[in-house]
Image 1 (cartoon, one colour):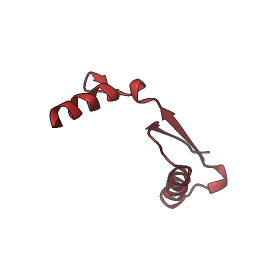
Image 2: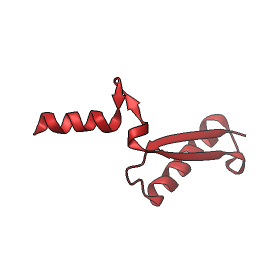
Image 3: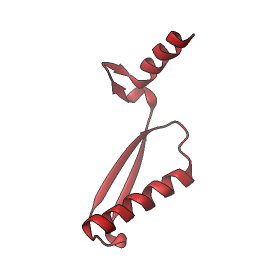
Image 4: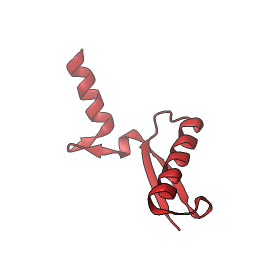
Length: 71
């Protein structure tokens, strides 16, 4: 029973995009590993931008710095 957890920032991912992610990831597991779609679980977690970090800061602060550089 494969379980896949996809984490994305909460920036307006549409229900259609989520459905497409679920379909494509499931198809990959079927094709590559021979897993049955009805036994494959995909979970999409939306993480607030201020809770996502990289480069020693939050994604929100990083993007704000990038916007300041462009201004």
